[in-house]
Image 1 (cartoon, rainbow, N blue to C red):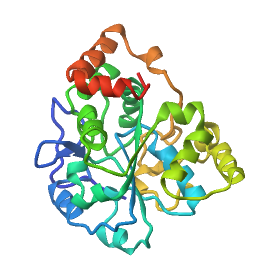
Image 2: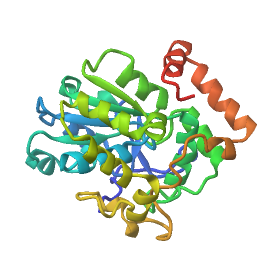
Image 3: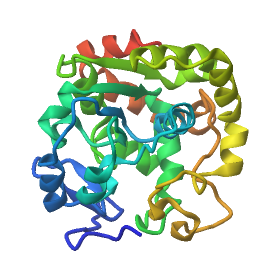
Amino acid sequence: MLHKSRHAIKTVDIPYWHTRSEDGVVLPAFLDQDKIVDIRQRKIQTEDVFVASFPKSGSTWMKSMLMDLLKAEVPMYSAYPTPYIDSLKSPRIFKEHLPLHLLPDDVRKCKVIYLVRNPKDVVVSFQHHMTLFKIDEYSEDLNAMVNLFCTGKTQFGDWCSSIRDWCFQDQVPSLHIVTYEDLTRDCFTTMKSVLKFLDQDISDDLVREVVENSKFSQMKKRDLNYVPGCPSFLGKSAMRDDKKHFLREGKVGTWKKHLTVENDEKVDQYLRADMELFLKIKELNIL
């Protein structure tokens, strides 16, 4: 089980256990600067693939399907010690939420699948996530979560900075952007495009079977305990209420039921603070 770093703190402006990177990015309680230094020094293999995203954007869904399609482990890169990461055979596939600049420089040479989701749905899902695990000790309401999100104080930092660095600064030449909304609308076609990006020739029948088995109702039944190599801090013993699930609703647009008009406007103002980035995000058809 992953424990809080000895450097973890809980403050009034960030009311959950966390650490900070050297440049101030807010990180989960199990990550500290020493671990980030260790992570940045890891050796990247040319064939490595990263499934990157801001949290609550569909990477668990993508990870599950890739595991079933490619018969591969897909561990979270920052959650496991370096000896375990080094022991994995190539080609390796990793899930990750860290900002690009906190990962080894050579990640930029890898193929990257980046998951993007409507940030308003991300906020609502993040609220559920943060109240779920004992390690965070977070008990604030959705209003507080909106404020954290709009000031870049959620775990793994600022949403806009993450999507800008990974997707819109030409730092990753081999990049394939996948939206949560596209996965929801047409999962089969979306996964076929992902497999083409990965140069994987998988039969349509198998893709359809995996897509069918990955429907939210099926995923929620299995939760995360069925995933080989899943960090124990995501298991039932780490949750405040073992009747709750890591997976919540898996729908598009649920923010409309949960965000007040005021909070909706706060997120809009946050997104429009960088109009150039906002227009690029709009082109993804997630808003």
